[in-house]
Image (cartoon, rainbow, N blue to C red; front, side, top):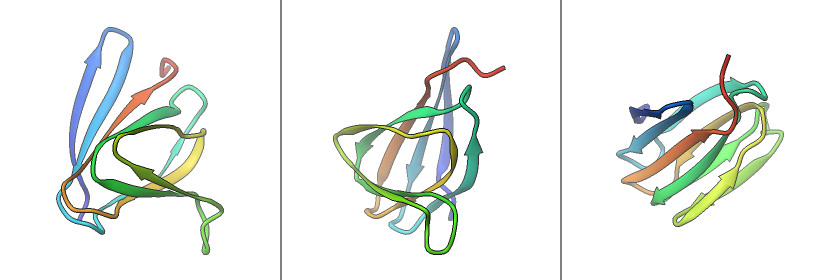
Length: 95
């Protein structure tokens, strides 16, 4: 199941809060340009972020409380604990 999305935008700051109800819920693979790369704050719970490929080109464990600087490019995020909440804040201004 995909997580619930809540957009929070303040001026030029673009962000999104994702609530993962269950462990195993996945924000599917998606791609970021340098203008849309983001920081990910794990507000509660834990997740794993994976790059593209099988096996994944890279993985990064994300846990609360923590802030992670994710690179531009493709990735997916999967909750590893139920009731996980992440907050993505775009570092650049999207065109």
